[in-house]
Length: 543
Image 1 (cartoon, rainbow, N blue to C red):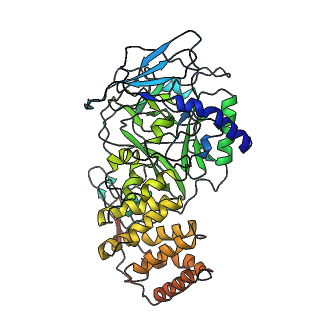
Image 2 (image 1 turned 90 degrees about the horizontal axis):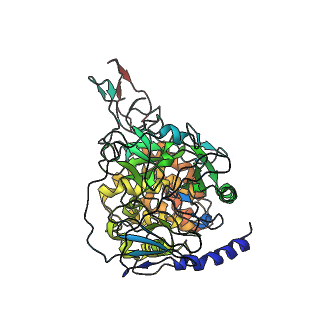
Image 3 (image 1 turned 30 degrees about the vertical axis):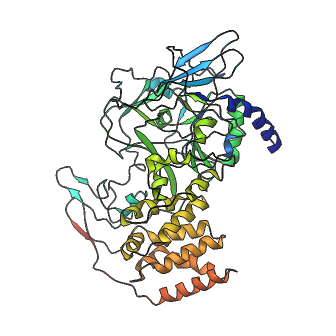
């Protein structure tokens, strides 16, 4: 479909999107409606509304957000002469009248009172039924080998910690100081922590005990069968990893096939995980305005993969949910059935997304925004422009970031490691660049600083200003030995910059290489690795 066709369709959709608005003075009335499961042309029953948001095939791809996106097509409007009113969540009522667009009404705002989460211990197990609605994949498939690729994971500094009673290797656990875990990389086989450390959850498919259930209004959902702690790994989001062109084509294809629910997740810029027809149980995790889970991206060997993790303590019987953070481009607002006291009433649509950022809380914290919880309120003070590439950047430019301290280094480096958006990378680099605390800079080095900065240089090599930023940070780093510099292979990347046409970049690169060459390697006593049988083995790997 041509860009002109896309623009014409966007123009036709604009009046409908404008009609979607909140009416704060209209009281909510009682009402309810059933949401029916959709049956596709192939005869398979697809899951009911899983609380996603619709997006037109042409407009959805304009999004630049790197957060997960789960979408579904709009349900059909009520028949002529009928009125439809339904109470959603958070004192929100959906009104649909003949010949008019749907409207959302909210009662007078009142203080949100926290409540215990509902439990679904008695809900019937629908896992077998749900598995019949899609093809199960044991792991992600890739349209080509370059998709999902990233700089490979690095060896951590941890040692094996075998517990005699459980006979488990406790190294690299949640409370450890594992560098890989802190920077969202799973340990690899060559790590000194051993082959069975606690930081291999995605690779070893250490999924939580969950069950698919049928909800009242959201279709299928996932239920926790055991208690979960914050940051516990629940499921990997598995599907077909495709590029942007395939994503665009599939949106059109699924629309033509009248498939109601699209299951796309944004893996990185221009790359998507499509679990619409092939995937795993992670696709049934529903949306909530007050979620108990979050989605995060981890490096596993040389691939970027997505996992669903516990946001807080979760009781057995709770439904597992995360915030879809849906884009508005070409999307009709969809009713939200999460039922939370803070429910916005719908997912997607112009009004909601105009007043909310598409950046994750992790990204906001890494950027040094002082009050992450008040971020949505802060950005709502100024109307957003239509250009999606300027929205979040504009607001971040107007916020003074906090100074970088030792405790914040881990989040900054982990975010920079996966960053594909240049303006975000510049902001993260600026936080490091403005810091003069030697302890902070030592922490940057320990958090795979040389390796991560090498990745940043390779990603934005053509931008002389970004290259200069990275070189200035490298120049500020304490230089005690050549060990980490040599192990990261950053010299090879910096060598390319000596031929840069920008004299500032080429001269600084040449000077850095010269100064690094004067440093000496440090040799340490080899680490003793303790095997499960109690035997000690010398780790002869170079330091």
